[in-house]
Length: 158
Image (cartoon, rainbow, N blue to C red):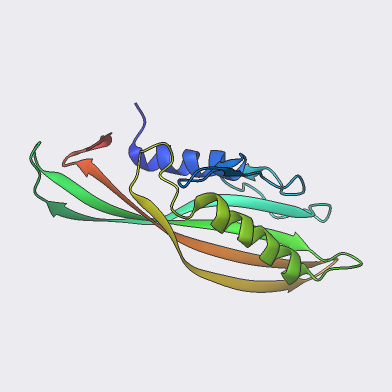
C-alpha cells in the first residue's frame, strides 16, 4: 500500500483529468482544451508545448492529536499545481494560464478524493512570465490538503 501522501498526489492528478462530481449533486465536465495533468515534469518546457498542468508536493506538516482508535496525526500537505500557458493570436499567456487555474480550483477545492482526505483549499496563486522564443506564463496554484493518518503509519488513513 502506498503512503497516503502519494495517494493524494495521484488522486489530484486523476481529478484534474476527470469530470468533477460535485458534493451537492451534479457534475462539472472537464473542458476538452484542458491538457492532461502530469505527476511531475522531468525536463524544461519545450517550445512546442502550448499548455501544461503539473502537480508537485511542496511540504507536509504534522501535529499529534489523540484519537479513540489510537494516536493519530493531523497533517496538512501543500500541493503545487503548475499551470503553463503560451500566448495565442487572441489571448495573452496570463489569460490562458488563469483559465487553467480556474479548472484546478474547480476540480480540486473541497474534493475529498474518494474519502482519503478531509478537504482541499486554494491558498495562493503566483504568476511568472517568461519571454523567449515564445511568451510563457506560469501560474503556480498552491493548495492546502487536510488529512489524518495513524501515528507512525503514514499509509493508514484514520
